[in-house]
Image (cartoon, rainbow, N blue to C red; front, side, top):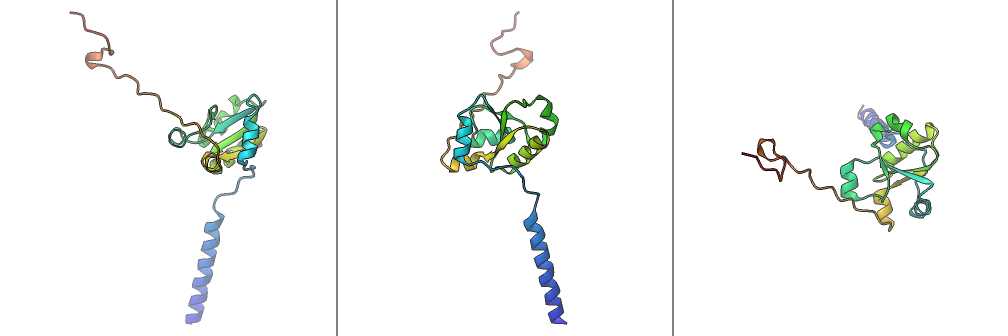
Length: 153
């Protein structure tokens, strides 16, 4: 009886382990190497970089000099205004969300070269552009006056 219980426990553990390893479906998008990405960057008039990261990730980690930021959850709703005449490269931190975005765009008929992770690119020796957040908007002074205005008597 003990042997049977151990076999059931072992089989259950293996089954759960296999399910955990499967995770979400893998993207069909090509993950670009640094050299492939740099070659595409050399033709800026032919490409469009779509960064699907949150603005805070781009600010904290860095990005590329020119890109379109559309978070992954909004991408399907944004397809109408994304130009189809350019080759698209999707970007996320490690190409996970970028791969999902590339799959969405490919299914919608866009020409997608692949995806790349910004952090992966930097680890391979690529240079990211550090994004500086704009200064906060000037706050209004008391009584609804804008800064620099004085109240007339």
